[in-house]
Amino acid sequence: MEGRSQWGTRAGFILAALGSAVGLGNIWRFPAEAYANGGGAFFIPYLFALLTAGIPILILEFTLGHKYRGSAPLTFRRMNKKAEFIGWWGVLVAFVISTYYSVIIAWAISYTIFSFNLNWGEDPTTFLVADYLQVADPGQVGSLVPNVLIPLIIVWAIILFVLYRGVQKGIEIANRIMIPLLLIVFLAIVIRAVTLPGAMTGLDAFFKPDFSQILNGSVWVAAYGQIFFSLSIAFAIMVTYSSYLPKKSDITNNAFIVGFGNSSFELLAGIGVFGVLGFMATQANLPIDEVVAGGVGLAFMVFPEIINQFPAFNQLFGLLFFASLVLAGLTSLLSITETYVAGLSDKFNITRSQAVLFGGGIAALISFIFATQGGLNFLDATDYFINHFGVAVLGFVEVVLIVWIVRKAKELREHADRVSDIRLGGWWTFSLGIITPIVLGYMLVDLLRTNIFKLFDTDTGNYEGYPDAFIMYSGWAVAIGALVIALIIASMKWRKDPDQLEDDSVKEEN
Image (tube, rainbow, N blue to C red):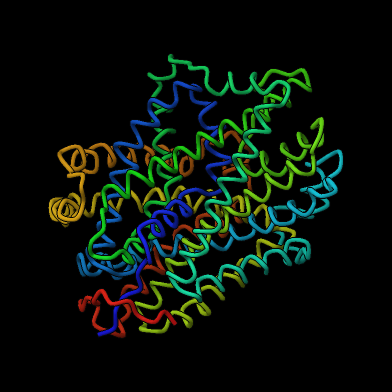
């Protein structure tokens, strides 16, 4: 009987899991989210959310993969025959995310090169929208943009090569190189940021607690949302990665290391980002709240503008910042793509190399739509809907199914306890069974209220005021389509016996 691929070392698995969790959102989402929700006071609900949702779900998914030893679809199939679609739903969500996440990494590669001569000029916003991306109106595809397409091809070439090499020789080695390098690069960024004039103004704004926000329910929801979207949980990644663990693996301890490691990087990112924003506010003689931004705007509009104003080493800082985005993005994209490579290989009994070429090749081709003149608008809408109506809904369904419907919480807890130094108690069961469903349920009700009942303050009532047709096919159709296709694939026959567990001998990965 053929064995399953395995991580070479425990450190290799932890670095890979950290590489998945530490992504672009850590750098451009967390700092702005913390500042907008009470500054230093935000860390109280954030830590509570980490301990009652983030780490418990990490333990859950690590245990699922380790116990049932398969890709996400195979794992859920082995847990309960009717639950296979949950695994494919997560795989399809990951597939969609990979198609546009790769394009953002391509932008970061371009901007790393632009940093050498500060090619974005005096108006980085106009440069990004008009000169680099050549953005068309919503709904228009336009032509391919060569400056985006070429680095996008490079991104996919790297990802597919690493995945073709396998778990130990590919993913593990890549993360052993990129994660320490990312930490070194970002530490250099933070050191430079905190030594800039006005940096303390930014750090004071970031850490100064507004304890009145602690009683605000939306702040707690924001904390849970940040933890949930930051840790790569609920879309097949951690289940897949943990399926490559040896039988003797400390699941609970690994989850705590990954959870706190990810949060530590988010804190480091907040220090770096707000040190730089404090410098910008001081230079422009503006209050800090007028320069705070998040997302694509922070990375590709605000930061280039700030870099232009640096008293020295402008090019070096730009090079380090955008290189950190590339590294963080690549490690996350590796994990995202691995979910459907593993799923295809298990379901259709094909070799790893065939799954990489087929699954990764299709994702790469679809990603070209985000390298067109209409790419930014497609990316914005698709990202919003797949994250909110894909990941969030999927997470809610996953937890409720396991804890309340098939009632596997006790069995999974016993499995984790058998192999872990830290034993799980009532905290874990209560967190998964009560706290997480309530919080995710509240988030979903709020999302449905603001989207279906059109309470956005825009002319059309749609997200960002996009036209109805555009939102239907680039937003709703993508999110619903992921579930529909998951149900279709789950109904297909397995090419090998899905209930036959593989042994622990390491197989040839190609």
